[in-house]
Amino acid sequence: MNENLFTSFTTPVILGLPLVTLIVLFPSLLFPTSNRLVSNRFVTLQQWMLQLVSKQMMSIHNSKGQTWTLMLMSLILFIGSTNLLGLLPHSFTPTTQLSMNLGMAIPLWTGAVITGFRNKTKASLAHFLPQGTPTPLIPMLVIIETISLFIQPMALAVRLTANITAGHLLIHLIGGATLALMSISTTTALITFTILILLTILEFAVAMIQAYVFTLLVSLYLHDNT
Amino acid sequence: MNQPLQRSVGGEPVCSQGLRPLCSAERETLGVRECTCISDESDGLLEFCDVPLKEKKLLEVKLGELPSWILMRDFTPSGIAGAFQRGYYRYYNKYVNVKKGSIAGLSMVLAAYVFLNYCRSYKELKHERLRKYH
Image (cartoon, rainbow over the protein chains, first blue to last red):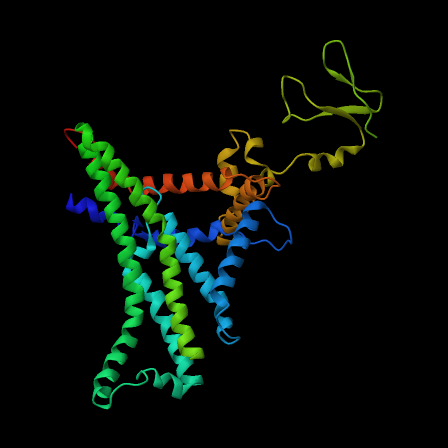
């Protein structure tokens, strides 16, 4: 049982070749591009959704912050599609791997921080000390703020990994429990209902992306615009 | 130059004088062959009437020609990439890029994805079957 539970999180390798590359690239197939003004339903829907999300997300930035639009929209599309594809049976979710999420979080956070430090040095350094702190507390608070700054990329990555992995594990467990309880019929209905609710909650993995990009966004906002 | 065909009573194609019938051996459906009458002097054009093996589609290749057809295919990286691209656009233009596309276009892709993942993880799933002896 223990070995079965975690085998779904191992990176897929077929005959020694990394199949994970193909799985990571698969969501790109589901977002076709079209250079027509009026395209087919699929592309139109996606364009409408993307416009909605980008307007919602990027309206709070100034022109300098809005240069990050392409990056952030690609990010939300990628994480959203990857998480949703992971809800299909037997599929592998790349965002359950901490390595991948760290690879996404650390460069983006570093870019935002360095942009802030280069363009508004004083304002960026001023973030380390909130306004109105009593003088004896200043050294401790600077340390705390530094720690909270450096923990941001770790928190971003670990948050995504933990949420998705935990959701998948729960589905596995509860699904297995349902199968095992099938012979005892009274509890089966209740367990199946729990699975349904859990899956619905897991559909809000999309909300996870929202959280991811939003957090990143807030960080960028803070560092760029003060 | 091509004149309408006249069939004799026995079913053999007959052309008027100075012409001979040219029948397509590959389009033999229901025992009827497409034939036209071409002039006797146009022998030099015959090789252009036959489609070379390399450019035939799969369903037009005869069974005996199949190994040589497979070997003649373009297996360079750009050739394989071209094959994937053609396949993608064939599916896209048939099911997605239509006026009233439905959910079926996306569902088929996702179903194939699920199936491929099942094949990939069959080795581990084998042990989870409800059997007494695995």
